Amino acid sequence: MKTLLKEAYGHILNETLLGEIAATGAFKEVSKGMIVMDIGDPIPGLPMLLNGAIKVLRVNDEGDEMLLYFLESGDSCAMTLGNFFGSTKSTIRAVAEQDSNMVVVPLEKVYHWMGEYADFRQLVIESFNTRLKELAEAVDSLAFLDLHGRTAKYLSDRVKVNGSTSLDTTHAEIAADLHTSRVVVSRILKQLEREGTIELHRNRIEVLRF
DNA sequence: TCATTAACACGGG
DNA sequence: CCCGTGTTAATGA
Image (cartoon, rainbow, N blue to C red; front, side, top):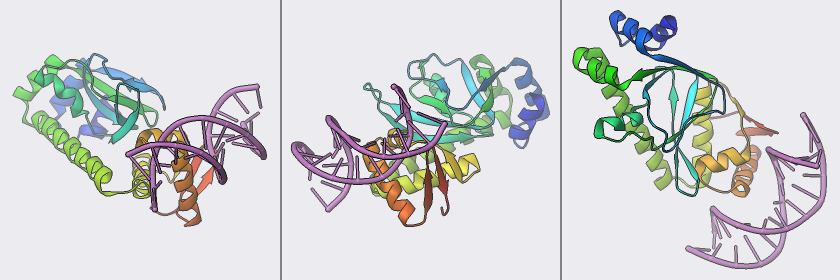
């Protein structure tokens, strides 16, 4: 676990801290498609992603979803740090985009290290900053892009976090992430295929240009 | 005009 | 057979 930690966070966190995280954090392994955390779940600590990728979604009371952003290796999920402001329940759903490994750091340790280590403080603040930027981007695309544009952006984002132009997905999943209907997604995907942007297969989309 | 819902046929695993 | 896909028709904002 120490090796994975160093690969993902070694560039920002000092050796002592990495050792402490390895010693006190809970290692967690999730496989693709698993719900890592759901609305209302108690937050056990600060999740620090070691490898893989996690999809973060907002969900309303009817169960409708809406993609917020992806977490990649070296990201921590600052949304869970709502704890600092008194909430102990998750307000998001997190689904494994790939098989992933993470360390969950207990909150007492997070408090402690934020006071003790400048580099840890830095990590948390940077994480907040990045998540906020990604949220702003999600709002932008909702406000300024039509569904065709949102779908194209969505596909290129997924290509980026997966590091592959071959996406294992279905039209229904895309529809859920973009909070629209599958009919529309099918039509837009067909259109993108005719434009030569993608290639459609069953349970798979090959992204040719992005 | 463009999205949504319902309904259907086709085909692959 | 079940599920993912592609399409159409009717309806709504």
